[in-house]
Length: 60
Image 1 (cartoon, helix red, strand yellow):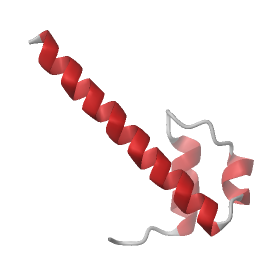
Image 2 (image 1 turned 120 degrees about the vertical axis):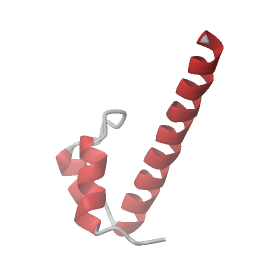
Image 3 (image 1 turned 90 degrees about the vertical axis):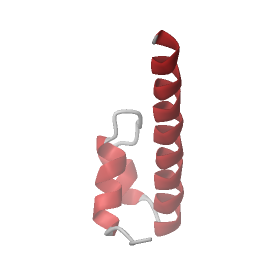
């Protein structure tokens, strides 16, 4: 796995539509907190995508 630049990970949290992390919160996070928050965001996005796929199959 390629490690993303820290600043990019912070902006990813701020810009994600499903995430309510503010600019101030994102840039105040430690590396550990940043890693946990991005892992949670990845999981949340995967769950949303899986649910959307499941719902689209039901409509067909």
